Image (cartoon, rainbow, N blue to C red):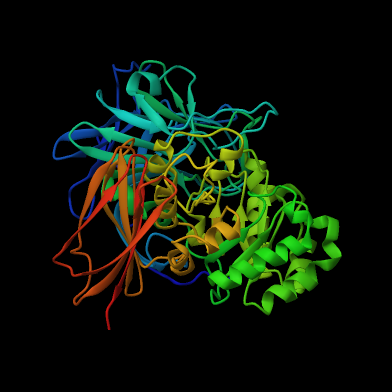
Length: 617
C-alpha cells in the first residue's frame, strides 16, 4: 500500500566522523524551550562502572529529566552496546511533517523537530546509532542497528530518571488470576519513592508532575513486529524508570536487520500540552492506507453491556439497530455470541443497511484469519472488534497486530482492538484502526466499581496517547458512580473513532440529553484543554466544523467558569446539559453566547456537564 497523506521535509547532513574529544551532543526544540543533550560520561549517582551513554532533557538550565541511561545489550560476544562505546559519526536533521488524521484530537497535524543522530561502536566494532529528537512539546529517543543478518536484543538500559519532588499518576502492571495481562487498572497518584519501588512495574503511559510546574507523560511510539511493547520498572532507589520487556517475553527480541526500535517518548509542557499533544502520532510511521474514503468514524450501539446474552439473539440486535438509526448513529456492534446464528448475519447486515447503520462483528483476535476478513467484507460487515490479545510480547505483533492491520485494510474493515496493548500511533499508520481498549472502562462496573476520580484521570493519562474505547455513558441508576450529567460529558471528554455507548438504547432514547447523544461527533477538528487537574476536575472543548462541544467532570461541587475566547465571530446557541436536583436528573438550558463571554455552569459533587455551541445563522 502506498504511503500518502503526509508531507515531510527532512534535512540531514552527511554522516561525519566525530572528533576524538567529542563527548557531548545537543539538540534544541524549534522554539528553543527544550534541550536534549547526549553525553558519554561517568555517573556517580547512580554509580556506574565507567563511562556510559546518558541523556538529559532541560529547559533554561532546569533539568526536567536529569542524566538518564541509554544502551542495549544483544546476544553474542559483541553484543554489549552499553560499555566501552566510542563515537564514530554524527548527523543532524530538521524533521517537519504535516499529516491528516481520520480520527484524533485534531484533524490537521503539523510537527517539527530537530534531531541528532550519533553512531557509536563498541570494543568489538559493533555499531549502535542513537536518534534524539526535540519537539516543542517533548523529546524522543530510539536506537538503530545497521547491517544485514539478524539481531537478538536481550535488554535495554534505556531509563528515565526523575527529579526529586516528582509526582506521578500511574497504572500498576498486573497479571490476573488466569495469568493474563491487561491495562485495566486505575491510574492513581504515586510519589517518586513508590513509583521507583524495586521491581514495581507500570503500564504506559505514566503522567508526571515535575518540579517547576512542568507536566508530561512517558510512553512509546511506533511499536510493530520488529520489537515488543515495553513497560516501566522501578530501580529501587535511583529515581529511574526503565523501559523493560513484558514479563512473558521469553528469550530475546529478535529479527532481521536493520532494526529501528520504537521511540521512547517524553511529552513535556503544561497540562494543556498533555491533553492536546499529537507527539505520539508525529513519531509513528505515516499512513500505510492509500484510499481513506471508506474510513468513517462513528457512534456505536452495543447490547452486550446491558445484557450479556443479547448477542445470541438476532431480534435484540435488530432492536439496537433500530435505535441506532433513530439516534443517527453510524454502527451497531454485535458482540460475542453471534456465531450461534452466523447464517443470518447477511440478513441482519442488509436489515441494518436499509437503516443506514453499519454492522461490526466481534471475534477473538488470535483466531481471526484472512478468510474471516474476506467473508465479513462479502457479507457487507463494516468492522471488526478483535478481543483477548492479553500480551505485549513480540509475537503478538508478528502474528496478530501487523497481519490484521494489513488484511483489514485490504478488505476495508474498520478495526477496534480489545484486550490489547496501549496505542502507539496506529491511528496515523493504520487509520482504519479507529479505537482500542487498553483501559479500565465502564465495562468493569459490572464486576467492580471504580472511583469517580478515574473518569477524570484517564483524560490526562490513557486518552492522552491515543483513541480510547472506554464504552462510556452509563445512565443506569444502580450502576453509575456519578451523576448522569457527569456520564453524558464522557461523550465529549473521551475521544475515540468508534464511540461505543454501553447502556440500554432505551436509556438514551428517553434521556433529556438525547439530542446531544444524537449529534456528538466521533472525530474532531480541534481540541482545547480548558482547565483541571488529576484527582480534581477536568474541562475539555472540542470542535467539529463550526460547532464546539464541551465536557466537564468534577469530584467536589464547584462552579465551572469557561472563557469562550476559542469561539469564532458572531453569536452561538449554547445548549447546556447539567446536574439537576437528583444525581439522575439532567437539566437542559439554552443560552446565547459570544467569544467575549464566560460560560458559568454549577457542577454537583461527582457531577459534570456537556455543552454544544452552534453558530446562530
